[in-house]
Image (cartoon, rainbow, N blue to C red; front, side):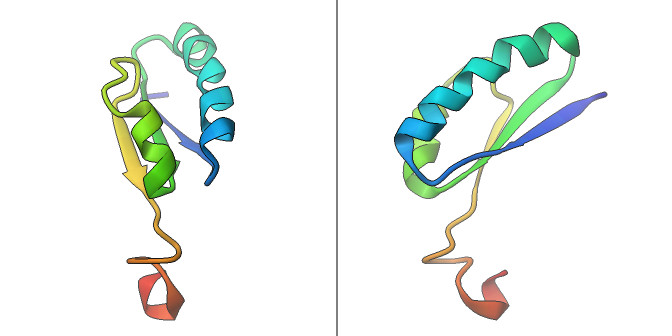
Length: 70
């Protein structure tokens, strides 16, 4: 496995709690990259975390709203 996408949450507290899966995933899958899909507000929690390769943003009330945005 080369990459793992963790589909996150829109709430900051849920995102903080989800960080506990990062280390076990890295131990179980050495060399893989971890990516998170989060809301814009929650994304700030993981920005700069060296264990996370990329933070993707899904903004359902902004850029990704409506049929065209999805």
